Image (cartoon, rainbow, N blue to C red; front, side, top):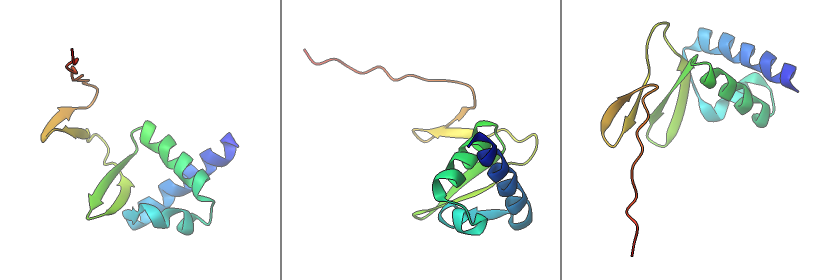
Length: 94
């Protein structure tokens, strides 16, 4: 199964290299692969920092991350540098 996920991740890279960006819901169709395998392969690439996501309305699009570009997560309206972790303390009710 792991080999199938790796092969699917390579195919995702080729498809995104050609198309630039693709709707997340159409990805498994484009790959002609079961969605569970496609999403695992996409997660593999995301973990390696090779893809980025963008939301337009209620649709999510995925594309290859530009080399050398550092992604930033947005937390409460402000950017948080990748790798930096912030924990929010919860107030306890007495």
